[in-house]
Picture 1 (cartoon, rainbow, N blue to C red):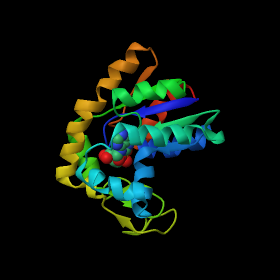
Picture 2: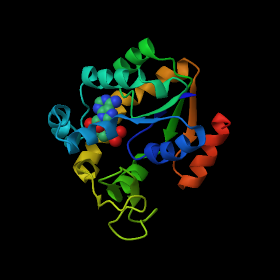
Picture 3: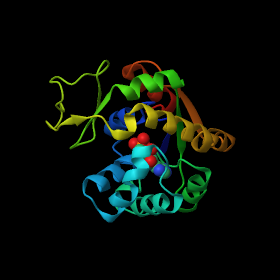
Picture 4: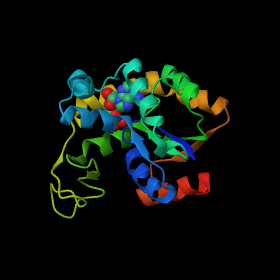
Length: 209
Ligand code: AMP
């Protein structure tokens, strides 16, 4: 199944995608992870996008669409994928429709207050990208990733000013995609406010996976 995960930053898209890929055996494609990996590698793409990510703004459509188009041309995506964090603008959605047919769009619904609480306490593994939280989902050992032993850190864009900016950008540029996909009849809403186990159950029910 070819899926898009839509929702504001902090809705738990990445966490749920990690669980969903195990159940569905499809690749998880996160444009945010691709950009962060490029920044860590100090590649030309990473150097170009670092400041944009730190500020909470969006990378330009042309760059982002090019990356996803290339990734979706690979063999492992032909039976299905989970696109997490893409598309984020109507222009990206229209471009995507030109090179892939998406089956469903899952809209993770969550109020802004919960987003601020979640992102402010989020700690991310520098090595493998897994997310933890200082209150919900603590690692076994403080500051260390349970999965790979990597160092946990606070992403620059999880700081207060950047969180506000990301929410503003989401409302202005990404939220219109909810109506865009609802009109196409492929949108499923999932309440993302409960604990992750409940969100996983709600997700399974809506997709029957
Ligand atoms: P995420 O991990 O999905 O929250 O993405 C982190 C950051 O990467 C975003 O705040 C943007 O700066 C950038 N980014 C990720 N996906 C996209 C996209 N589809 N379009 C533009 N910028 C993106």
